[in-house]
Amino acid sequence: MSSIYKLDIQGMRKAFNDFHKTLYGRTAFFVAYFIPILSFLAMFGFMIVLFIKPETSSYIAFYSALGVFIVSFMIGTAYYYHEVRDFLREK
Image 1: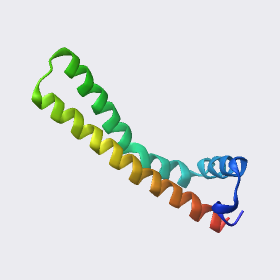
Image 2 (image 1 turned 90 degrees about the horizontal axis):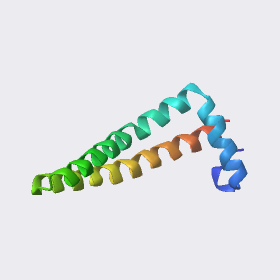
Image 3 (image 1 turned 90 degrees about the vertical axis):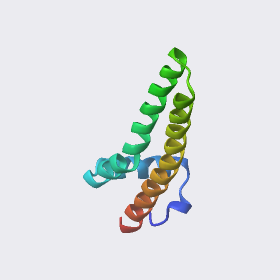
Image 4 (image 1 turned 135 degrees about the vertical axis):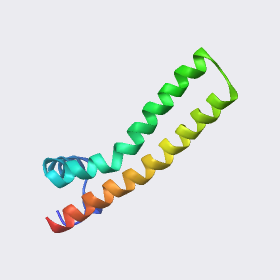
């Protein structure tokens, strides 16, 4: 497995599984998705606050958390896929 671009879906699953079995793979996953998970939880909390007491500041906080979630999820996913690609190249 030298190139991630030549893999089918089963090969991709095996590559992600092999990468996740390493300590570095688990650490990269944590680093990549820690901020998106926290911002998703904050977004969920702000959504509950909006149902209880809708105010302008609550909407701003909700949409800010939504924006942080989307951007950090895209950056984290790009980072994680980059690390998987490097793992396959070295393997």
